[in-house]
Amino acid sequence: MLAYPPEGHETDSKEIFILGSARLSCLINHSAIQLEKNGNFCKLIRLKLGENKIRINIDGKSFTRRIYGVLNINNNPNPIAYAHPYQAFNTLNSEYKNHKTIRTSTQGAINEPASSGNILRSILISNKDISIPLNSLPDYKLKKINAYHYRLDLGIMEQDLDWIHYSELNPEIKIEQISNIIFDIKFQKPVINHKIKFKNQVLNISFTFSEMPLLVCIDPGHGGSQIGATSPKGIFEKDLNLSLAIKLATELNHQGVKTILTRNHDTEKSLSERVRISKKNKCNLFISLHHNALPDGRDPNKESGFSCHYFHEHSFDLAKFISLKLKASSKQDFAGIYKQNLHVLRENPDTISVLIELGYLIHPLESDLLCKKSFQTKTARILAKALLEFHKS
Ligand SMILES: [Zn+2]
Image 1 (tube, rainbow, N blue to C red):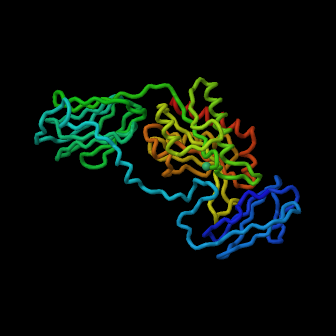
Image 2 (cartoon, protein in one colour):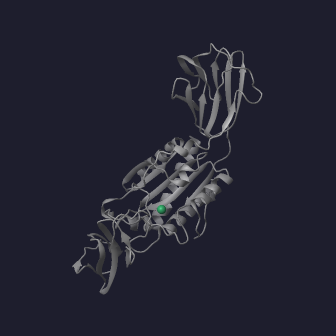
Image 3 (cartoon, rainbow, N blue to C red):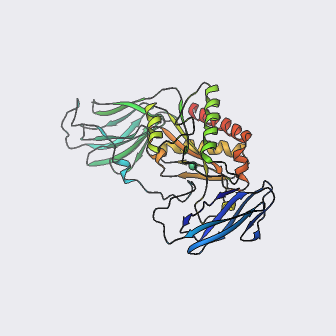
């Protein structure tokens, strides 16, 4: 069968890959194509502008595919799904748009006027609070960026910081100085609440962390008419994603971990709906499952392996942890960890969110491995174990 490209496909790429499988033979424009042992083939051919008639013969059956070479498609319909590595990464200015100012000293119970002579000299950090000795209460701002990340602007003029003191060996709160008096506060666990007081010339911010049991949101990519990538033998990514997601949920449930699936049958779900499901159920881990492809102009013979994607910094550790676990127990190539501006990761900042591309569904050899039930079962076990170990650590 021929998996790609579809009839009438338009592309501004100078080359295109012809992907499919045959039992005995395949000819493209009358030249015999070498089949892999599994019968799959993938051949890159050059395109000219305008109509390209490609003559294909699979197992003695001839047909033509018309591909149109065009100049610059602005809105590439992206006929075959891919995540890595050509999606433009935009630094999100909008990232900080939605952050709420939780409280400032001029609001609420604390309402003392700021006075001059405030010098920042030291910061003390324990696993539940931050204490800053100051002469008087400054006009500070504390912003929640997400459940793992706050930003503190001390709003004072003078800074002569001698030391930052951590009283714990494995600090759950960490501070990064981003300017003289502005600090990023990062947390190991999600913060659900915080309290501020100013007493005995010490500004104290204490945090309450979520101790909710592990609840994993599993997101099988695509679904319905959004088929995702297609293997040389015609297997759709959406189906592989779903069967792996169900196996992963079953594994986790066996271990006593509750799971939520963003879809549990072949249905279409928007990206925002997927995030909404995760948020509504207050899931503390989010894992999106995909199988990769490439855009026109790339050679699927040359790209293989799994990759892990994250967006918010607090999700990097999980992306790394899963990568290490997959790498240790798989013969697949490791295609890397990517910080990537993907909707389901970006819009889910209050949870630890990763997207895994388990491999290239359009790679002539790797695709057969990815479609094996035994491979999926093994992968589901590795992922379940990795999620549990990560949560415990
Ligand atoms: Zn996908």
